[in-house]
Image (cartoon, rainbow, N blue to C red; front, side):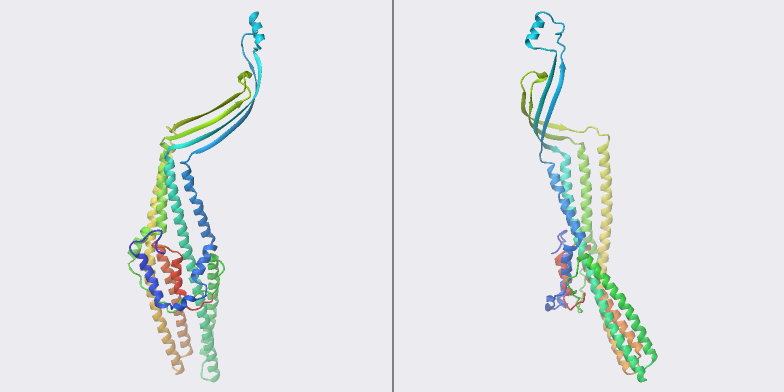
Length: 481
């Protein structure tokens, strides 16, 4: 699967893919595809389920996606219900002048039961439903656009975390493979040195050798033993690092094919890859999203100056045991209302203006960060392309050096048999050959990692398909991971 986050129209994806597949078809036999060792794909699949940091990024994306329905909810009506119960106990005195009334007026007041003093005790119950439908709130539109950008940024962040996980797993996997290869070579060299030591001792006892040959073989054996201890420690550390990323290893690792042949990068110019990174690098795209969010924050803050228009509907009912002042039957009032409300802040003490200035400053900072991130992406793409080109040349040079070292070792072996070379010469020739083999193994794994790093630098999709392509290089031979 080729570019998803940023489609590359220049055919760069197929070019890089062709670079890898051409090498694969040239060196890996079809029968090698059926290996049962723990492949890079197996480790990668384990890491997807095991890695806590990647799982945390997935959880962050789930959390960030909730800002979108939250922003949409601001356009929907708000419906609320309220209820109230109350008890009133009051004493009222009315100044009606009855104390001074005499004659017929006093008699009439007494007959009607009118008094200047009376007590009132009653219960009140009421309930209402209110609906508020926003008709226009400028900040809601700005917040909705910002929410979409935030979700897009979170998706890019997850894709970036996925890309980083692939690079980390691949690097740890290759380090463990290199550790296995280094241990294997030191063990083979130690066995060879021990055989040479026994031969030197036998020659010394037979009177055809020298004590110097024995001492030099002993010194070389001690040195190789020290290198073996260091190699095993580094291999164990690499295994722990890989297990920290992907959990327990399912089996021995698949080693790289000894016939590995890297292909040339097309096009080889670093500026081409820097131009792609400038536009499609995931970190650059994420910085673009941050800049968009900062700009949308300005619109949100400016919208605080705008009016807000709401449609408000209310329906309610109120019950009361008796009328006012204890006079009359109980009350039962029911009714509703519909209104349009406009509200607009006229002065907030400079708060809104200050928030706008703050958001503008944050936007400027996001723009500067984008510039710096873009420059860094260009530099990393140039570096990755140069490393891939130089890595290929280094592999070819080391392959030639290995052929020369093997030829030299054979010549020294023949010279030793003819009495023209010493055991020290043969030990030195073997040491040189094993050193070149270790360097060649390291260069091959570095090339494969460099291929992934270049893809990541220019924004090409790193996914399971990419891992399978790289893993195809490792489908030959047996490992001891």
